[in-house]
Image 1: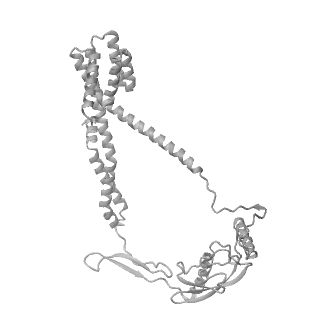
Image 2: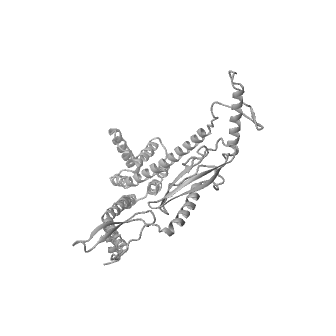
Image 3: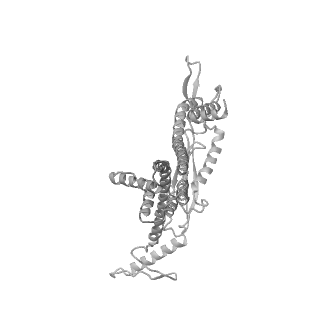
Length: 411
């Protein structure tokens, strides 16, 4: 079997080949992911202190077939020698976690994050504050009105099913730390509150116009910038411009394709009329008049760009424009090499009277029909290529649906 035949068969059955190849690839992946023969298990490792563990195992010998069972093991327990050290390490970890954004227990500025359980050590933690006016048992810090640092103690009850102990964590709550902006805002509010208190009997409260050397201005709404409107207008105009350019390109491609498809028909009709004894000009006029009559007779008639250019050229001929200039401009307006070649043949025929004009048109017609056939084949290949992607996606989805249960059974 020669290479051309193999290439033809491959092109013809490419979807089938892709399906088979996809199935083979998924089969190989399933074989690679398959863990092989299951190993015997003689023990179950505990999850850790305070954490119960459930293991799903397959049991052979209990019944005629393999039985799947869920086996649970209790959390590991501390011995009497381990418990004190475990609680100490648990407290160190809990205090470090409770600090949150604070630098240390001697400098508490922000809310603490008091954990209620240690998953690592398996203990439950209950926190209690001695001074709930500055810090609550949930870790909320109340230092907005605090004038100076205040010391207090957080009590922690650490316990599990068998043991319990209590610890005291000394903390120092600091006055609220303010940024420069927050400090200035707070100072201005305090100044306004003082003015309000001093003028309690006055009908109005005078707002300070200066603060820390800054000129203060008050408004009932924030100044708004509308710069975004003209920027939005520019962006919108640019988007419309790009859209119009893209539409023009799309329309031009559609026009060129249609003109390429109509070219063989135009050449064929010219050949028929010239072969019947008509002059090129008379044949041109006949084709244009026939198209215009059809367009006027049918309201839903589809505009054919090549015939529209042909009609414009015919109108110029009727107004006395030289024939050579009309044919030349017709080829330029069409902007396709086929029409430029046809215009060159017609202009050459008018200038020098080509004796074998009929033979030239016949040759041009054969080339035009061959090119149209190739164009149709290309369009068909483009359509099949566009359909190939969703087909492959559907194939992969189907393969995954089929293979997933089998693969999961081996994991």
